[in-house]
Image 1 (cartoon, rainbow, N blue to C red):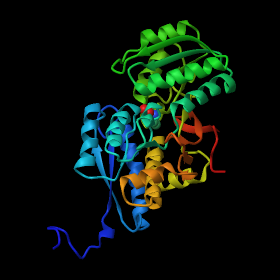
Image 2 (cartoon, rainbow, N blue to C red):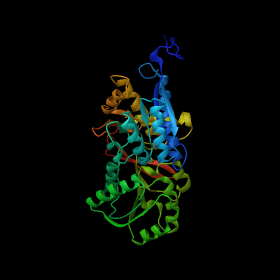
Image 3 (cartoon, helix red, strand yellow):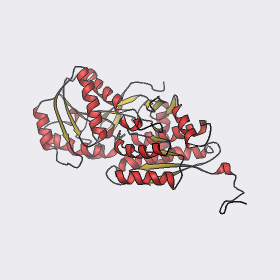
Image 4 (cartoon, rainbow, N blue to C red):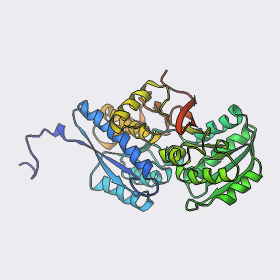
Length: 370
Ligand code: PHE
């Protein structure tokens, strides 16, 4: 006898794949979450237009964690135990990806974070992956750019001490810069709730660095850029990391930040074929340029669907194994190979802020589609 509620005329094969996505769709990092979701939506539409994966459509269950750690834990548990997802996409930030990753790994559900760069995230265990580079590489490349390319030796550092991404990237950069012959002449840290940075800025200015490395999120960088300008430090004195990539930074501090460089995953004018194809599709749908977050969200979903298609079975374990075997995946953010530590081996883009736009400057650690 058929189970109640099941329509026997629908073949089991047409049942959708259930994928969970947990994101900061409200709260402090709303922009990150929404942009990531847009990238995922685009990938889902594309795969379903092509007939889905193994003839089954993909359905994504989105959950908003409100940029909050406790909610992250609850939502990921819900997706796994209530919705019975076979894989998870998320989160944007390293801090919340660590929380979600612990839950996913414990329940043996593969998770791919699109943009959490802190090394700790994938160290959680065998079910946690990422499609972005790690901060080891990002810090190293940032330091090489500052010391070798820009030729700056007297360096200041400003970061958020209570954020795993910011403090981790500061550490990676500091170690790499020193090895390359740079001197850290001043270092200041703040906590994420602070809004007045004048004291730190004045102390940094008085130490006379040639340049300040600021691996912080856009929401702190905006007031810092404004207050620094008022204190006589132009935005071009700052070099940042991927946390700067948000339209808000351009809108609210684009003028102050003119000329500044940062390491990133993507830029709208990056000269890679897949990046340009993504740009076109995204612009048609959302009527503006995509951010790194959207391109990474897109790559995380695409790489997952590709892995589901290659997997030897439909179980979370089989999907996990297929993700682990991914080689030379052609993504919007470059060519991605998943390494034995479940990290993405890929290029890094140096972006410059020019006329209130994120502009491609160079690719480093280059694995690009050529
Ligand atoms: N890399 C940041 C983190 O790990 C998140 C981020 C990615 C922010 C891309 C902006 C752009 O926390």
